[in-house]
Image 1 (cartoon, rainbow, N blue to C red):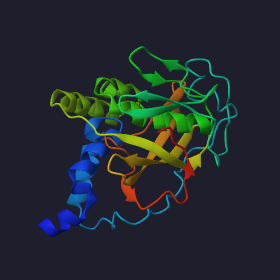
Image 2 (cartoon, rainbow, N blue to C red):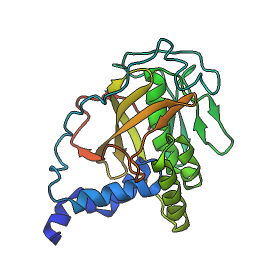
Image 3 (tube, rainbow, N blue to C red):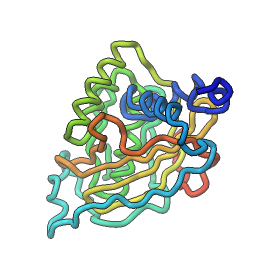
Image 4 (cartoon, rainbow, N blue to C red):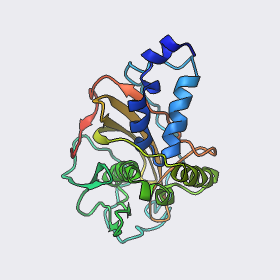
Length: 249
């Protein structure tokens, strides 16, 4: 790509690349997504607002959807099989690595280990939101980057992501500072969810990253493609129009 295009494209700037590393679950995922944005000349202008996403097609729930995928791994009781969130929940924020990680009473995280690793969320829209946000933010701690692969849904992508995370950590890759700034729900069925999170980078720029989640083994897990990449790409957004404001820093 020509140098003039590189100067205009925010994905090529060191500040963006470093911060995008944190936005993805593990260091290498965001690096791959950032490279893809530069390498594909047909991508839309990243300064424009992201296009709307069609709801992901999912199978109809069974008569007992709360059992499909297992009961809560840590005993959280709230279960909602449909719905959405149009307002920010009453949230407490705690610094993990360089990012503020959210928690909501009765919705999770139900388990927080001594090293800051967080998991177990309610089978509700609030739980799905918390799972997406915490999965992203704990990746800002290099010590948790590899461990956070446990939060991926089972499949080939999980195995690839684990290898990529190990390689990235061994190579000394680290992220910049990024904070959750807002959210919007794209889909929720009780056993699957798609949540678009807005993040504010240390440069002041805003980016959008949709997270596809599935209720699996009693918790919300992040879905990835077979190559370990997130199913939806990261994009820059001009402002938080259309998002529910939600931030801890």
